Image (cartoon, rainbow, N blue to C red; front, top):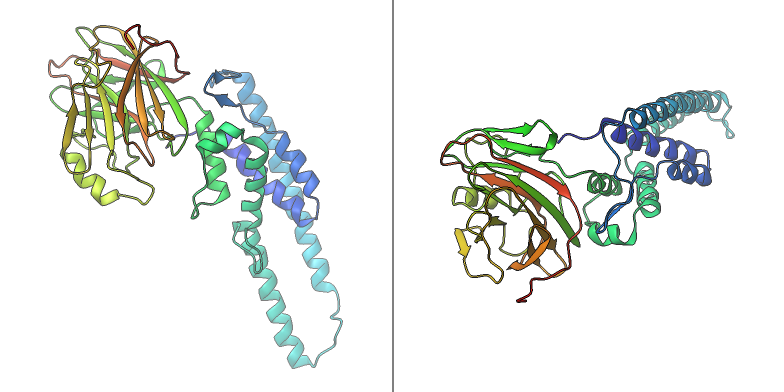
Length: 371
């Protein structure tokens, strides 16, 4: 998974500096550091500050912050080492025999070494429920996440707060096709948010690594085709497979992968669900076979250039289709667990100009006149 290195470095440095301040007993300082790096918030109404990943001024400011944090971490590291040396030089309060002193001194040095090692790696200390790094991540998430973002990111029991904070950052970035499940794809000239179809006769699938686990999520797919859209857009389970020769997430070849990678976080039996843009049908996979829903309310095929919007509502278990900002209807019920947005193309004519671009957005509440 590709990610913005400046954001990742800034977050890592944030947690480490917050931990260093906690070791000195200054929780307030850690909170002040966290407040300096409040990321962009995105709601169902779209981003409050759209931003541009190519904005050199933003990148330069982030680099300066990262450099400042690196210098501060180095200063704190030297300070901790100086305090440890001073502690080692202090005489023991209860004098022991030379042999006992050697035994107990070695034991204390070993314990201090393990404590320092645990602090640097962020492992849990004895008698503590969370490691210091994870505690810093917990404070950061609680301070930065909005109420809507908390509903979208409920914490799993076996998940660290650091991982949850990483998911929050990922959910705030623009949607991209940053994982090619099958070969024969390449990004469009506009960047990683768009892909081009390069070969014929095989199913080519790309997906976003942004995993959705709860709440409402909307994505708009802009389709550009010479004769008609051959793409299917929808959601699939976040499987680990990459660069397969051909992959159709709703096809029979996906069933073995679904069974082999099935997780306790995958609820229900809708493991992939896609909108077939040319015909307007709904195709999906229950883990055993490919199924079709040809009569869902609002079915409508597309042609030429258009935009398809998908609203995944995991609270209700539904996925709703929008056509050029017009609500078509609920395409499928029964969705539950983790999903990611995806696109699948099969250009039987061998056309290489078909392109799909994904972006975040907000659903239009305007319904069709016959609904």
